[in-house]
Amino acid sequence: MYIIIMLTILFTGMNTIHYEGKAASTVSMKCGKHLKAQTLAQLIRSHPKQQRKSLRCSAKLSKLALMKAKEMAKRKKISHILPIGPNQSLRDHGYPLADIYPGVSDNQVEAIAGGISDPKEMMKGFLDSSAHRIHLLAQDKFYQLQDELGVGYHYDASTPHIHYWVVYIAHQNKDQDRHTKVPESKPN
Image (cartoon, rainbow, N blue to C red; front, side, top):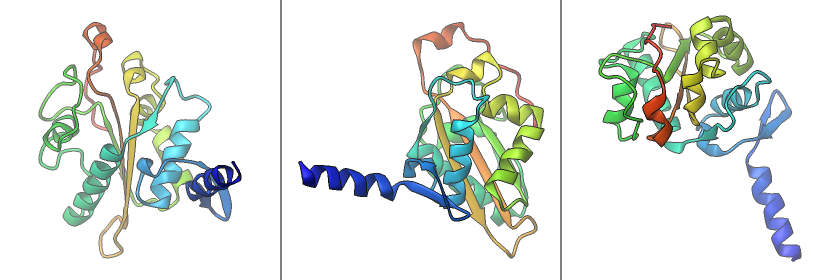
């Protein structure tokens, strides 16, 4: 019994995020590879105005978010279309995005930004944008279906924006999808 308790404490402690010298919370490493990505994921999940009943971390979405952040840095630009839209990109990279999401150039899954290094500042920046706020906090009924989160953060001092952020929040096929109206894709 003693060994089990100690192992639980050790493994729980491994997932505690420390940011600015403080423990932010316990977050699965699936939320993001970088400490800053994990911190932003926790800020999204625990926001007091979060409308989703459940938002779990997805290792697949986090991996794809990091890939996208690196691709934006490589191209030295912040863009949803590289060269296809986020919905189709997730599908093409093996994420089984629900069928109700539209196609090639549409976006109901991705928030991106660059130039901000601090996760708290990044969250504020996202929330100051109505399109990002509606998506990240599920302020539209459609987004409340989204129950998987992945965050990517990439740093490259040789590029114009230096800091690159990608947040994917999406969901896989479910029965209730047939009755849900998909919001129009808007650049954000």
